[in-house]
Image 1 (cartoon, rainbow, N blue to C red):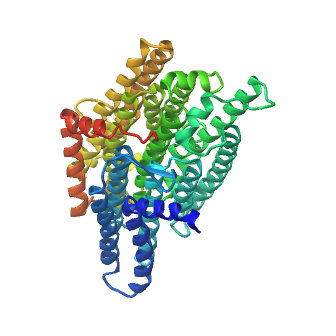
Image 2 (tube, rainbow, N blue to C red):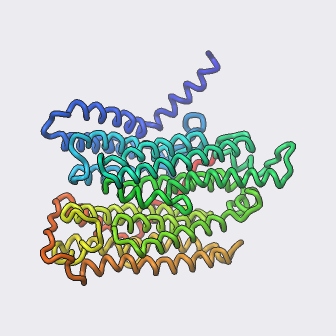
Length: 517
């Protein structure tokens, strides 16, 4: 019994640092209860929306008073640090925006919206855990919490064949990716003798497995890392684990599609940074750890190749899309490729670039999907053809959409330019160092892909401002006041932070503190 006292004390101490996650946990349960209790209420949607926002506000309030001191919690399973706190703010913002947009829209019947909000809180909790995970077991559990709940919400629209198809593909690809990932984790544990991401780098550096040749050990290590990368790559929709993305984005309710494109993607990159920078880079320099310890392969270059293939496939496939949700899905794949450039740099600058890009991407991508929602509500269609003449039917929506698309391209003076600038800057810094030719080619491929993306974004802008309406008397576009406020706020933010980068730079710079033991 006395041997358990230190464990109990550690759990009690950790609970004081775990208050935002506890608020989300209890909030999820409360929302399920309220969903039943308010079943006959006339103000059901308003009350449940207010309750969901209250849960997020409680988590935000507790997160605001959370000390930024790096702490290991629950015997090394998770960590509290400035890095995790930064991403948790992003997750809360994505969740709050999704609640507000869903409460106003027509994607959810009132009798099921309580279930949607409760499951959404569970996904936010899972993303919190992904950003904080410092143990392979917690990595797997947090990914599964996000994934299993996402499968349900992707197919949330009953009787919709596209929703059913997308959800089924999501389950199949997700199940395979999870199985492959846990198999790779078992290899890592067998080779290193630990599941701790903090200890893993040092164990790999001095890896000597009795009875195995050096070549066999390296092969087992490479296989395990590739398998673990498959699980993370599936979550961020990187090639070749991207195939679920277009069908899920098209079939899922659009507010959830917007959330799925920014929240879990940011959580996936937070987890990738934890794994590659904390676990696999080793206790010495990151580049040395990657190149020498992990099977003798140039892993930064391999991540760079993955980045180049992902952005190229995403952009080229987006060229032929006429459905806006599928176009934005392939665009999301391409942006995962851009963001992987920061990971391939294996530097603090690269990590900061990823954080800046995820912050900007949250605003511009949710804003783009918001325009898709309001046009779909008016026309019942998601085709580019129905965007013809949008500038005359609703100039505010057309101008806002143009701002978001130019920002997604990465043109100045929009905030997307700031995000891409830092990604390219992180790559440029590596050109003069080891493997500089790899980074030079990666920068060139990134620039060419940016030019390609301008073409399909410009197609939508041309349809809105130049092309004549597809039908003689197109339906009027009536935008709800809440949507107008959000569109205006997003547009202003994109313009302001495209010129004034300082707040983003300072916040991300202060958040470059990962717990390393």
